[in-house]
Image (cartoon, protein in one colour):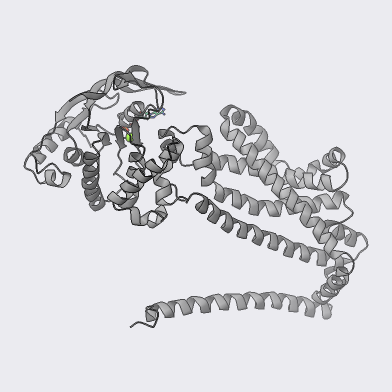
Amino acid sequence: MSSLLRLEGVSKIYQSRNGEIQAIEDVSFSVGEGEYVSIVGPSGCGKSTLLSIIAGLYEPTSGAVYINGTEVSGMSRDIGYMLQNDNLLEWRTIRKNVLLGLEIRRLLTPETIEYADDLLKKYGLYDFKDRYPSQLSGGMRQRAALIRTLAVKPNILLLDEAFSALDYQTRLALTDDVYGILKQEKKTTIMVTHDIPECISMSDRIIVLTKRPAKVKNIHNIEYPEGSRRPLARRNHPDFGRQFNEIWRELDVHV
Amino acid sequence: MYTYKGISKERCEYIRRIKRQKTLINVARIAVFAGIAALWEILAALNVIDSFIMSSPSRIAATISGMVSNGLMHHIGVTCLETFIGFLLGTLLGTAIATLLWWNDFASGVMEPILVILNSLPKIALGPVIIIWAGAGMQAIIVVAIAISLIVTVLDMLSGFINTDAEKVRMVRSFGAGKRIIFTKVVFPSNLGTLFTLLKVNIGLSLVGVIAGEFLVSKAGLGYLIVYGGQVFQMDLVMSSVIILAVVAALMYQAVALLEKYANRLLKFSTK
Ligand SMILES: Nc1ncnc2c1ncn2[C@@H]1O[C@H](COP(=O)(O)OP(=O)(O)OP(=O)(O)O)[C@@H](O)[C@H]1O
Ligand SMILES: [Mg+2]
């Protein structure tokens, strides 16, 4: 698998009036095309910071991020970044929300609009395209946010706890949905989550981070046989519990 | 059990109850209003209150009908015009300044203490200075009206802009949006509600400014009538003017409320 994204010795130190905080220390890994990689780590360890650096929203203090071999500086057009909340704009219809990214990047053409409409159709939101976000359920809103991100055709998708605002039932159904969508669209995905079962059920690889400053503690390859790769199927597979225990132990949660 | 429109009996019952409640409230409002007027009239007739000072509804009605042929509409027009210009300019200018300050952290840092001081200063105190600066006339009155609404608008709009949902800003930034797009696509639309709240508040503030300005310099307007009535001991004229003022304020408020509905529809329509 050719590597699409590569981090080399990325560190981040936040400067503030009260001193410095080292959030990330010497993180290196690479992600292949079409891979689904999850990042887990104790809360506050620097996961969101890492995603923001990959997205080009923040600059690393040292080290660099490469996409297809070129160093990232500034917001990268190859990347779609989906934040924790759906962040739909209440005064826009679902369709207008979905087109927002294209609008900002000045990519609104009949072709791109048609692509966005196709995504809406494919993922069951076309009948709701003229509704406002407040008229949709949490799961539908999250799907709309995902389509907004996909509409700009990013090569790499970054998900920052994109499902954590949802209730458990919706979340299970939506992760299954999203997994299907992303595999079908052949997207390379990096997902940050707190939820160990969620990351085992969706990922090809899991990167476990230490507590702050975040370093790579371990990388797990997750393999499931053909036919039980969908998130819901994985949860019923005998390997699931073993993997859960391994990662749980590594996260070293003390209450 | 369904009626002909497919609405259940309970729903009909519910709607009827709400309607009845609404009618009842309206009737009660009119009754309270009429009651106060009647009480006022009776107390004046019985000489419990001095109708020379406090006037009475019948005298006010007579005064107003007399004023109509005596240029009342002109006075109302003058006050309305001054208020309208004052509150429109105050709000627009205030929003524009808030936008610039949002744009530039350094400028807003520098301006903050000045704005806070200006905000707590009673702007009317500047009246004499404004009259000399702007000239004794309508300009001065409008400037007083602007001065009184401007600073509040700057402070409230700026704090609205700054407190725009940071996650939404991050979202548009993640698509590569710069400051201008962040402002037009997220920050400003998010604060449309704040803007209209301010418009409503500013009507009242501008009216205060206009009346105070008219007390100081004018030759026409409701404030002028009030001062004039006071000077010639015509309390009927004062009370009538005050009541007309209340009606004018209420109508302006309603106009802004209508405008708000329209603007919200426009925002939704323009982003459809
Ligand atoms: N802009 C910033 N300036 C200064 N410090 C920051 C900034 N953003 C984050 N931090 C600090 O860096 C550390 C890592 O934050 P980050 O949000 O990346 O962690 P996280 O792993 O995503 O946390 P969570 O699990 O709560 O989502 C935290 O201690 C946080 O306080
Ligand atoms: Mg985070």
